Amino acid sequence: CIRDRMYSILPISVANELRHQRPVPASKHENVTLLFSGIVGFNEFCAKHSDAEGAIMIINLLNAVYVKFDDLLKTNTDVYKVLSTTLK
Image (cartoon, rainbow, N blue to C red; front, top):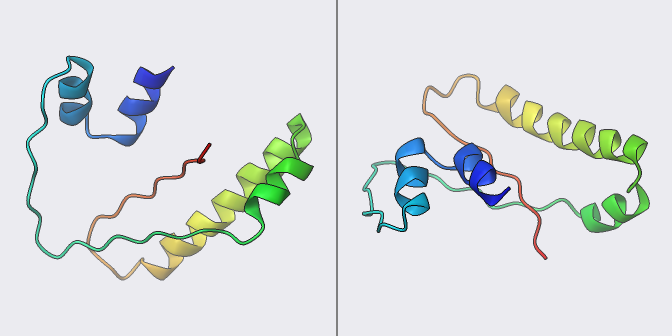
């Protein structure tokens, strides 16, 4: 459900406003870094592993990537969020 996804990736206050079709004011944050990345061959990998067992392989791959980011950022006291999505 789109509403469930919205609440899983957005702050609750933002999701509530969007759910009620109200505008969400922009927020200003100091020292923000955004990382956009892609995994080479990911679409092909997913296409080749589309069964239930393959889904677990995909989850394990993404988990390994995010765990590596966690390991690299352990000394960083700033907050970060990882969002994974697919484009159609």
